[in-house]
Image (cartoon, rainbow, N blue to C red):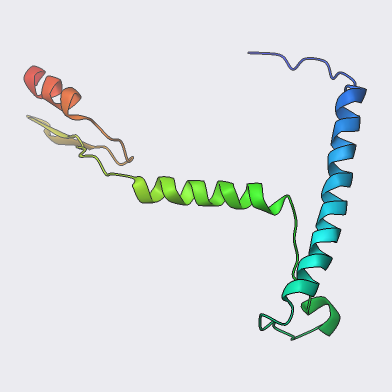
Length: 122
């Protein structure tokens, strides 16, 4: 069992980097939100239910793009998935005492090589 190392104080360099990144994200987000709202507000129909001032804003956030990238990448991985063949093992043994069966209730995949070996020894 591994122990948890003692907590160290964060590096002040990293603290300043994180603070700077937050400040940049805030400033860029505020600037570009204002810019694109003014540029695009008349080109799109914006839902005006609720707070009219707030609903007429077209938001921009630099943090939104990496998150969207992760979502799109995962979507592409799922779309590219190719199913593989798999087998399950169900065993039974008959004796004087009756019939004993064992069916694997868990979802366990056995690949062709393993099944071939297993069928040879049974």
